[in-house]
Amino acid sequence: MHMIGLQRLAQSMRALNVDMQKFLFTNGAASFDCLFSMRGKFELSLTSRGENPKFFLFQIAENFQMSTYLNESSFKDLMSVLRTHGISTQGFSTSRFFQALNSSVPTQASVEKVPTGRQIVLLRHDLEERERPFFDTWIYWKDKGPTKDNLKKTNTVFGPEALAFSIKNRASSKWSAVDLGRTWR
Image (tube, rainbow, N blue to C red):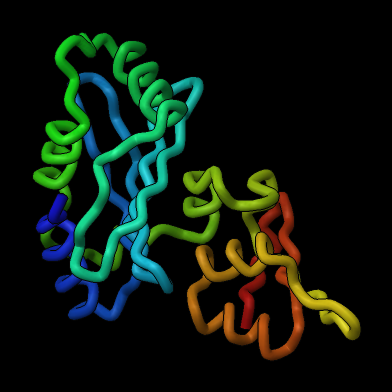
């Protein structure tokens, strides 16, 4: 499916020189916090709101094509979110769901909608050490370097410049549960 909404948002993001935006998508009574990232690969994540949030991550091609296919586990998770929020899932279509999502994407980026590092970590359930959303310091390695998961978190939270620093200096980002007021630079 061509995600024209994300394409328009990306154009606006480039004009503002930002690489991530947060927005809300509501489908019936179900709501999702969405993060669209242009940090490295284009990615769209949806995290359902509520007591038992479900996380969905989609790769977006550079031409803004996105697969509407959901594997069995993701489909079941989405159905549980929609049922929990009182929507009949009879006659549900993933393509209609993603068309509604595409229609709800804001076309204008905003500096206020750039998520904080903490917001990113809380919404991205695929990142390591989610209970530690705040940057602490760098750990420099002599023999080994940062793990693949650590590099992913560094790039997702801080972007490609921090990722390049981590790789060049063989340094892992260390995270804290408490905001120490530190930045990666």
